[in-house]
Image 1 (cartoon, rainbow, N blue to C red):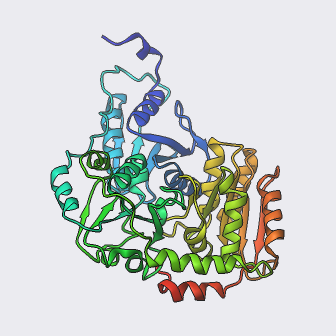
Image 2 (cartoon, rainbow, N blue to C red; image 1 turned 90 degrees about the vertical axis):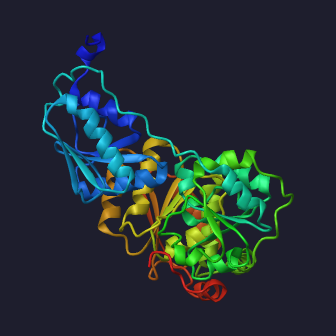
Image 3 (cartoon, helix red, strand yellow; image 1 turned 60 degrees about the vertical axis):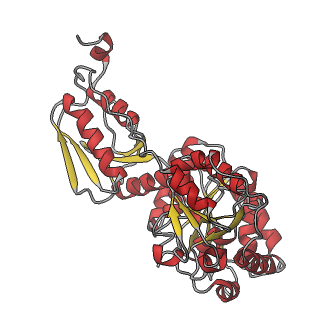
Length: 433
């Protein structure tokens, strides 16, 4: 028997319900009947916003084209739907493909405004991870004298940051995080050892070469290729197992001293803070980003590149999801896309996008979309031809732009000489190469 509510549900509404049940947070692009869509006419801009949405909100995002739902930029697998009863299987298969990293497309060869049919099929809930071998990992941990945790963005995506806190506390552990996991600990926490992966010697100076066990959790191979971080015996633990491990482990006591990397980077960063004149040192610029934006509950996003390196390396985080820098080059405009996505859900939240100059067409197009939606974005563009201003002038200019009523593009010249000191500390930059 068909439930009474099925009569009122269209195929489009059923599609949206199935997508939500499968864990899809948003659909961006062309309008689809019955599906709440963030309307973006340009398919390239829609794809950029979809990637930014996933990186910012850590959920699955789809792009809508005329008559189709797509995951990823180059769909290779197509699921054709000609009848509403095929929707559950098609959505389930597409989401499974997307979570496995495969670009795919659900082609909707049916009337989305027509009736949905029976509601006796739903997308099965996401399968949990297999039961972790807690005892085996516990024995490895018990046998180690100085284990170190290396955490990546998978911990954030799995929403297991509280479990990581419990695990680190139970073991008295220092934690190195890659830049996709910035904010998993307050920068002043004794458990926060450093953000790593940006430079050649980060993992070695971060203590991985001197430990007897590396506990890797939630890593992204673009931020932490195995040949760089596997410098000692290691175990790879799924984020979902951290809470169980914390309950079955012993308390080691206080955290060991921070590694050399943390001390050397802090010295070089703070030396840049001491230069208050112009041109602005990069670490002074990011210090202002923290004081004016991220430290006030705001959000900072940076494109991969020179500005992104400095944001990822030196912007101190106090809370999760206040800073985003991509793991791989996402193309010009990614930072502005992230800022716009945040504004879509929190229109009053202060946001700042940071990019290398000159500003490109995607960024300009996204700023125009934001203006149309009444969601202005401030963008600081690192450009050698930009104005050379001091730290106080920079902070005042940021405050006016970020908390103003319209979009703003702020060119800025920064002092390139500080990078030499950072390279002397930890070797050449290897992120995004």
